[in-house]
Structure formats: C-alpha cells, structure tokens
Image (cartoon, rainbow, N blue to C red; front, side, top):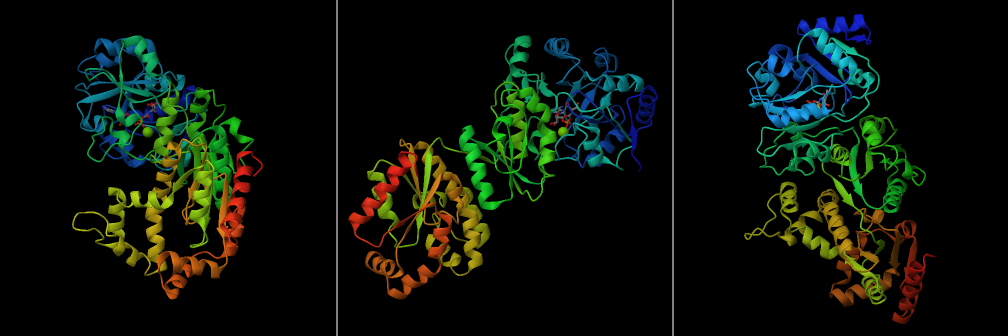
Length: 540
Ligand code: TXA
Ligand code: MG
C-alpha cells in the first residue's frame, strides 16, 4: 500500500476524513503525540490498527472526540459521572484521557474486552478538524510500531508506518511530546494509570484525592495484573539498551565518562547542564529545570540516540518523579526495562591485584586509616543465595542446588572452572548482581571514602564506579610463597590458580596507582598511607 502524505490544508483534511469513513487508517497530529486513527465504531477498521502497529489485541485504545456532547450523543459511555464531567471541563480540550464505563456503541476491539472505555478530546486544531470533518469518534493509539518510542513528528510516523496505513497528515512537531495523562474514574478513588503533563496535583485541585497506580513507577510482579494493559509491555525502547542512572550531576557525568573511556560504545541521554562535562556522544533533553521542555524532547531524543554511531548502551540521567517529572520518569524507566543504577554519594576507590599479592592486607590498612571497605567476596556470597541468581545458575548449569535449596557452591565451582566458556557464563550471571550489592553496601557505609576490595574488579566491570583504581602487585615468587603458607596449598595448585589470572601488565595498564608489596610490612604500610593521604587531600 502506498501511504499518502497529506498536509493540514482544507482539501487534504477532507481526503483524510473520507479515508476514515471508508474504514481506512490515518495518522494524525495531536498536541501530545501522533495518533493512528480509525473509525471507533467500526470493529474491522479498528482491528487494522492493531495489525499495522503489531499491537497486542488485549491493549485497548483511546476514543478521540471533537466535542463533549459526543459522549452521550453517540452512547460512548454508560455513565458520565460528575468527577469525569469536572475533569472534562477543567482539562478538555487537552492532554487528559478519562476512562469510564463503556457505552453500547463501543466495539470490543476498542476496549479490548474490558468493561470500560478511554475517551479524550484533543486540543490540536488538525485533530479536531479531522474528527469533525469525518463525523466519527476516532480510536487512536500512538502511531508508532508497538514497543518503539511514540512519534512526535510526521517523519517518525513515516519511519514506522510507511506502506502500512492509508495516509499521514503532517501537522508539524507535537507541542507536549508525551502521551496524555490517563485517569480512570471507574474506581472508587480515581486513579492515574499513566502520567502526562496534566499532573496529579492539577487533577487533585479539581476533583480531590486521586491515587497513582503502582505500575506507573514500579515494575509489576509476575502475578500482578496491570490496571492499564499498556503498562505491562516493554515500551518506548530504542534499539540500544537504556539504563537509568540515579546520582548527583558530578557522579553521573564522571560515571558516563569512565564507561565511555572503557567501552567506547555508550552514549548519554542527559540535561543541557551535563553536556559540557560529558566526553561520550550525547543527546540532551534540555535544561534540568524545564520539565515541559524535557517532555517535548523525550521521544525524539530516544530515537536520536539510535542514530549515533556504534552506540549499544545509553545511560540516561534519572529525572525527578515529581510533577511533570512523573511522566518523564514513567517513560524512561520503561525504555530502560526497569534497569536502574544508583550511584552512591561516596568517593569509591577500586582495589584489586593478583592472588597472594597482599590486597587484603592493603584493605585492612586502608580501613585502619578511616576508609570504608566493601568486600566483593561478601557481596558474592550474598548474591548466589538470591532466588533470581540461583534460578539463572540452575538454568545455565543444570541442577546446582542442595536438597535444602541452598546453592551447591563446590558443584558450581567445579562446572565453572572446567572451561573458559562456563566461567564466562558464571561471571555474566553473578557479576552484575554482585556489583549492585557492592553499590548498595557503599551507600550504607558511614565513611566518605569507600574501597571496593575486589579480586575481579575489572572483570566485573566494577572499576567504572571507582574514581581511582589501585592494584597491589608483588613478584610471582612472593605470591607463591604467601599462598602456599596462607592457604596450605601445594605449589602446583597455586600455579594453576595463578595462571587463570591477568598478568602484571594488565593491572599496570588498567590502574591509576600500583602499590608494590615486595618489601616489609612497614614499607607496605608507609606506601598505603601515602596513597591514602593523596586520596583524601584530592591530589591523587
Ligand atoms: O496522548 C495520547 O493519549 C495519544 C494520542 C494519540 O491521543 N494516544 C495514546 O494511545 O497514547 P496509546 O494507545 O498509545 O495509549 C493508551 C493507553 C494504553 O496504555 C492503554 O492500555 C490505556 O491507555 N487504556 C486505553 N483504554 C483503557 C481502558 N479502558 N482501561 C485501562 N487502560 C486503558
Ligand atoms: Mg502508545
């Protein structure tokens, strides 16, 4: 099918209206995002929307009207309660969708089998002209491929829908940029199912107390039912993996820069104020204080990060969830598939080194000197007892649980160390969670400087959270001697263990400081003291 590209001229609107009356699909601008419209009273036409978008059939659509009187005139709802009328009066025409009991005229395709229907009277002049000209209520979801960011320009629509719909009307870029606030009045206390730029506070000023559905800000558990089916799907996602990063401005930009330096394949989705400090490719949402501007820019930005060359991960600076920020947070957390990193407000220092080099001694001295110490070994022990980790390990390596459902660690170790591939698999399951636990532990430390004591600091990619990385080195002979003495191992066993580790060059290349531990305990103490002094007076 060839998709007609229409303007908002009188005659083009007439053409589009005729397509709709014939059961066709037209993408139309609204003040929020572009909608993919069909005659809401025609189940067959509506079904084609689901096909064009690849949208699950259990996700209901919003019915767009040109005048409040359409609601009763066309039997769109069985009940137009007082609170809904007040909301309509206060916010229509505009970016608010009200869910009420559905009326006799609504086909099942629109409500996806629910007993309710969502209705909205948009303020965009082109949308209103089209609805009025067609003489129909229009069912219209956002005009993107299901799962992709919503379109805020006609070009976005073309990118997703060309050849799949009869026409698109170009009405320029959308002002609001995020979809309407969705509120249901079919519950005892009205409840916001999707936040938009009409905020909870503004709504409460008109109808009193409202609730915010749990799914707005949280991931639903597997057994939880979504009040709004749209909330359960992955959403707004660009091709690159998005991770939401919570933390101070400085911690965020430092973190992104370290990730970029290390991996070279990430980008930042940030605020205008961050841009100057970020070395990685970036897309700005605008000024940190201007939430409406950020909302306007959001979907375009999510599409723009995909056009950056070689970017596989996008670190998005986490917005506040207050006021209009709730709408931003809600979209971003879904774009991120609920992956959030919280950077502790600490100075984190990585400490690594080969087995037997004396890392633990250095950690102990640093602790005495006043640093907090977070042990990767302790975090690892905690991680492998978590249900999700155990499930992933069982899925990867077969039955690795003891009869009491605890992890059979000896068994896991045996399997993991039997091949490089298995070891990589084990690490890919456990490392991310171990690092998360370490970040939590760091946040809980009372000290300002926190040491990440981690033999696999670099393998676990924990070094990107550290302002500086220190490695402890000593000669092969010294390490052998210490390990044989400390762990009562045979020389061959120690050699086997040592051969699995990075060599000295690796640690030298990846560390900001090397602490040499080939001398006496006193010498070691003096060196650590010197390094710590530099860390605390900022000259490190
Ligand atoms: O701003 C907007 O609302 C845009 C423009 C085009 O009007 N439309 C839009 O539609 O965002 P859509 O389909 O992408 O999102 C509608 C959301 C979905 O999450 C859907 O599950 C929910 O509203 N919804 C629709 N009817 C519902 C109902 N009866 N009960 C609960 N949720 C409903
Ligand atoms: Mg949508």
